[in-house]
Length: 236
Length: 236
DNA sequence: GCGTCAACAAATTTCGATATTTCGATGTCA
DNA sequence: TGACATCGAAATATCGAAATTTGTTGACGC
Image (cartoon, rainbow over all chains, first blue to last red; front, side, top):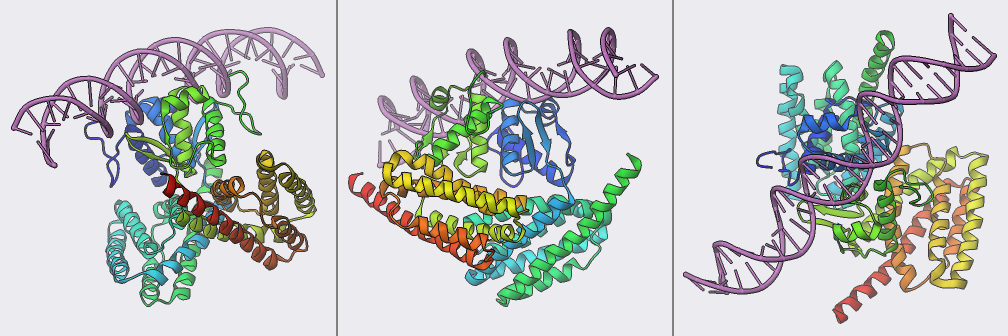
């Protein structure tokens, strides 16, 4: 395998490598929602054989990023308004529960990490408005780290696992609105407010702000999705 | 493939078939928690080749029933007291949310199905006390159907998906206490109470009863687990 | 003891063979 | 003529066996 590396963690096997690359391409939208995943094409594109490829796709199916139908193949899971609402609501439930526990348990290390990641995110937000689309991956990374830091003191592995699953799903939607309409609302102020409430241990307020944050993001995504859908309707 | 069939649904591919059989064997305890899954042995035991087997195990890893470590192989996910508490709590969160929505939305069909599955479960409970261990799979099936019927009117695919994930996890634990100590509390009365509250649309009460039901089951499992652990301590 | 290296066991991957589905061409019937 | 069924050929998914790579174990020398 020599030097094929995935994301932050090196891939120990070709299946890992394929899993990480394909997941990243699905979340970013490089592999469009609903599109057929032709095994041979993917095998060539990512330079892995059928077996590790199929293994990677099976894992992605477990993450609900890929849909598989026996003897018919694999598809990128499709996006819809109904699913957006569903993901947003359930994520709110999980995210607030995790945040509450994290705030109650978090110590000085946690506070520092929340602080640090918030500043990183502020920087990334500034670059996003300056540089536009180029900075999207950077912002997504910082955004993920900030939200992860907030719940990092939560001591429930299951809450964290489910949270991660749903975060990935929302990221797919968010990327659409970032590409089509840009970060056109005061996300920074929302993040600041959540940050402040969290470090001040105002648990309920932090949860309420998080819930609102998710809802507002969803509203924005909804607009982008509806625009995309009506555009498809007129051109296709 | 001819006539290899899995559970209620026929397996369309060998990978499906292997997935269903292995999952069933993990949940039932036939494949013990923490045990190494040797690929060659499994390949012979289930009569499938490496490719479908690996695909099945990859999917099971997505369900958190199997743990995989690159270049080292696959293990059955282990059970622990901490994990039991975690699963129980998060499942309570998901299950009550789903139940609440189901009660609010459920129509006559839903009521009938809750009714029907409750009676089936009552029958299965009776047989479990009469026949003992033989009737465990039957009871588990009826129990699953009852709890599924309760939340069947919930309109959130994600809540249902997560609920299914966590239900499987708890089933693993429950099987332990069913084997070691039998159904030694008034589970039937708890089920009846939940049933009554649900069909009477007493949402809050039904949720509270469900939460208590999960907690009591966990307490019983905990005792069985602790007994098993101390036994292992003295013999091993 | 401690590190090194060879032999072994196991997981991973490649590759070719097989089975299934899809799609377009052809023919049939209303 | 148009809608629909039927039949291949091509595309695609699926699978098993063999080859490769990696990890583990235990013997050997230092």
